[in-house]
Image (cartoon, rainbow, N blue to C red):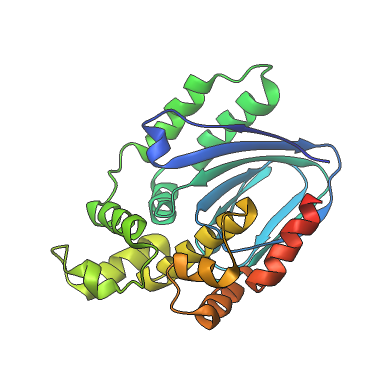
Length: 254
């Protein structure tokens, strides 16, 4: 069984980083399939074999460790671990793939990698201020695009309704084509694909929390046009139909 700890960053960094997880185990072997998530992830691997296989994954190798940048996806993905499990992962806001890709070209990611390893695996008690100082160099120098903020707020208010990107575009000052291109450069998927990803993940949260009357009403509450649209999209992003996903959740719980 792997040993995992988590840490939530301070307020300013929380605009970019949702969670930092630290995993360790002497000998750990597992292969897991995951549904397309609502986050970008930057993983620092200091142990044995660790891989992420799926869409929008980049690997960076420095000396004796590997960094993996995993962006948004429109289909399930696979993780594989073999040998010593020694990882630090940053769960990032969806837009952070573009930001991190640019920062890796400008900054030395090895400095950040060394600090994370030293503080989480060498020191008895990590110096969180030292970690956040280094993370600030990567994130706080770049402001969040206002169009992305507006789009996220728009989706949060309208998620239960059938959405059209054209309707949102009337609220901003750039053309629909320009917004889609800018969005894809940072999120790696289109705004329409992002809407579906958000709807599916909202449905998954409700399925796990048992916050639904039936699967048909759940699909409508998450903004899908009808049951077939819900089932088709859910299966594309998760690999399972809503009913099979629910059965798997129930089998794990009991």
